[in-house]
Length: 110
Picture 1 (cartoon, rainbow, N blue to C red):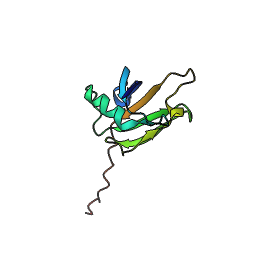
Picture 2 (picture 1 turned 90 degrees about the vertical axis):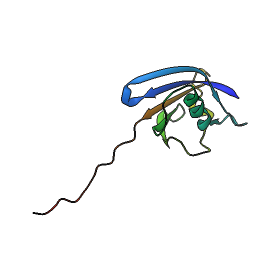
Picture 3 (picture 1 turned 60 degrees about the vertical axis):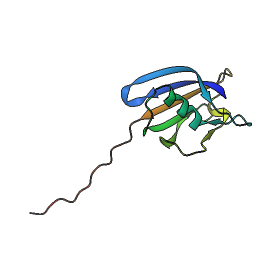
């Protein structure tokens, strides 16, 4: 197993963590298995259960929504999304609490 540096942004807490050498699985074509990164972060004690997961794509210059943890498997991220312009490998992840649905109950008639 290889490693990648991760920037983990907890949106609702306005908190950013820079985590070096997070264990990750890479495919032969260098795609990164997001599930392996999330599992490694959870093993390190980061509370990710049931949060909405996004990753930043350097190639597309935007955050991409992956789903609510646990994310669907396999969810592979291409190298253009985690290799920066200087050649360093950094995965930027944003997490947030799921939106609470608005209750639309019927109003009682009087």
